[in-house]
Length: 134
Image (cartoon, rainbow, N blue to C red):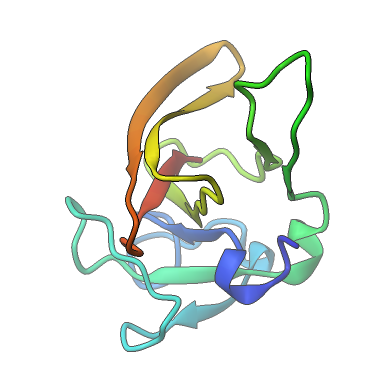
């Protein structure tokens, strides 16, 4: 599912083509044009270019939704492999919560760092995406 273009992980930051030094060039397939339906812009870093990862690097990205009677509060799991050491850059993923309207909490964890984001799901579609620091 992670290879569906709309659900893919994308990258932006200082260390990619056109934004500074070129690191890990083989990670990126192409730049996402600002008029593309898949384009996302960081609200603080406006103007940074967005890059599509090379498909081979996304093979281990996983998204799944399920219901388990012992853990009814867990609605989905998304996992992404850390691909490069670029602490000032960002990865983007679109997060779809296929649940009834209500309040949800999105948790993330990476090597001991963790946090959460409160999310409200509405009757009508609302654009929403999560920033994942790379």
